[in-house]
Image (cartoon, rainbow, N blue to C red):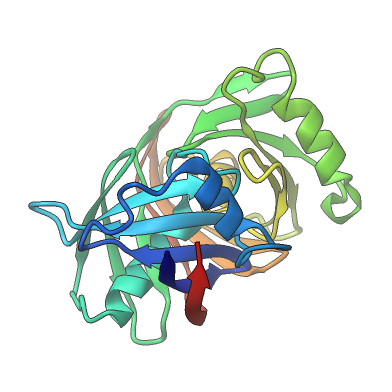
Length: 260
């Protein structure tokens, strides 16, 4: 089967996107997804998404990890799919779409910034001096004094496969707070990719929530990743975080056809 695909990236987090509004790719299997995401033999990506029709919404997002498994929410993926929908002529002032973790809102600014509203988060768990929370996907947040020197692949894999997380797996974020209270640097080891990625939307969201600078009210955290700059806005009230928005670029890389 010859398929037409699109490739998008958000701060280096890259995705294969298939327009599935006609249901053509409903039968796509794990091995096929893995092949398409393979950087040696396929297109190459951190994940694959289907743009589906969903009654009552502008579209539905279905996301697969690079290993072919169906995944939990992907923040940068969601932003890229919104930009793809926009490029395909689904142009809205405000988008409403369905993902695996529930409904989301999004918008595309004139400068190309894509903002995605994330799920509310209530509380976070302290574990071994670090943090565990779910921002649509489960995340472990560990602080570092020099994050660029961390062996993210080894340490991330060890934590991801540790006894407490081995069954479901967890994404592991290493975070350095800069001299400015509202600026952080984040590097992420992603389950499903089983490697460090250039950026992770739900990961930087988790890191930003941990690194609040206003204990009660509005927070905006600026995040530097290997692939570029993101920001997260949110409201904090007690242990609850709501009105969470992930903001950053989402760009088309190329499109083409491939034999599957």
